[in-house]
Length: 368
Image (cartoon, rainbow, N blue to C red; front, side):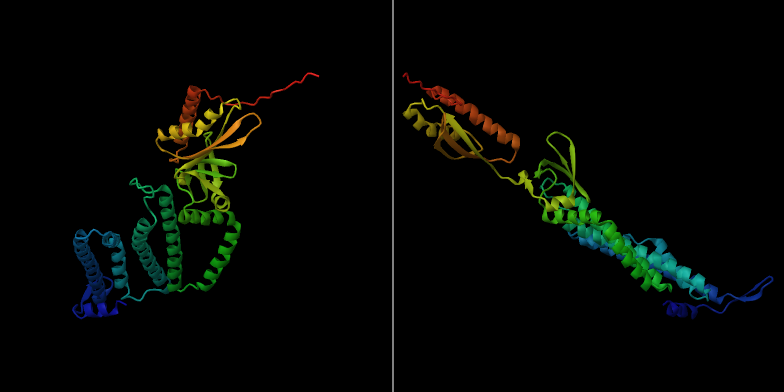
């Protein structure tokens, strides 16, 4: 592919002979052409790289988009030794090289191409995963740890696939039969998949958790009889911090098949409680219970009153059902509201002389 350049340079290089001891007259024309090709290509590659960088950096400075910065980074990732190696290969192509040596040189050049191409593609992969996977889910200015883990995993998988394709490309271009190699990789991949089906199941489950987002780091969830705050969502497992303080590790595959309750998703908590007062309470006081409860909630913030009713006649108490909504998902705040209501209800009942009922049994004895 460099023959035309070599021919062009050869037209400007005069036929040169050098007399060397023990060798006599030696034609160094081809050597001079090879050196000239090497120097011209090296200078040309360097010049083009610098021109592109200067122009693109100027263009990127005028825009706020990140894609042009990615293009600049991709060009900057091209290492000088790569185009020096290309220039050296072009110079050596003027000579008849032994078959084995030629394969080695070609393989080294193609491997350098593959390595450099992967570095360039990785810049665009990083741009893609950063913009589409690494997200600020909470709006706190920081990337969600689960998103960062997923972006690293996608980047790693993409690089592995690129290297596999690149190595097969190099082998096929140096004369190695890759058909059987590809077939062997397919059979080996199936065997590995069977051997690691549990790990792969957790791996794909992690993708499902990321894209479906049934929970995130910091959420309080209940899985079966276990509960805790999500601390980490990994490739294979998810780690919870339970209320007792220990770390609970659950495989991702189990989480995708289990019923998960996410309390962080709650906008409010509904409370339905029952209060019993004694049968000895005067009827006019019984009728005041609804008003007392409503006035208590009218003075409380962060609570939405629903209803209160005399629900039923219990064995030893008049049962009132009280329903209200606490406008928070925080469990501690939810319990604080319940406690405040209970304390206030006790005070208001005491003020009007209403007594709470407790299990009692009255025995009537009739004399014979």
